Image 1: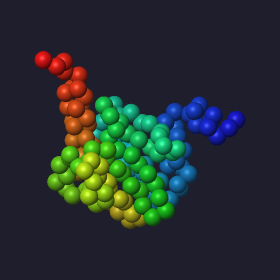
Image 2: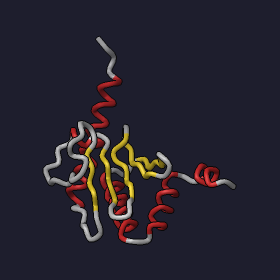
Image 3: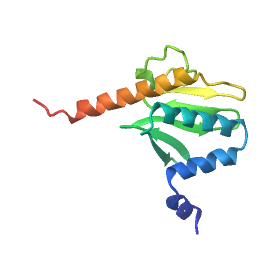
Length: 138
């Protein structure tokens, strides 16, 4: 079976499980932890696998992606520039008009409550946009 056939046969959640296990270091631990926090913030979150191997969490649209690099795990919030980040979690992609990111490095600890609040804010934004689009024009 080709690699693409294997990926198609696995669910996104299984592919994310595999990615976490493959990392087998601090990056896997961070990705596991943020995934856990996302699910706590939104038990109905949808996990997706996009762009040749990027974990994506969605609810009425993309909330964030979880990319792993050699020296960091990058959590990119699709509409982060529109979110209130009172805890100042965003520390990357700050110049963009739409996205914002959180770069996590070895030894970093995620502020669980602030992170979950950010996820909930992203859900609220996505949901409000979806509702606004579904209203009939007068």
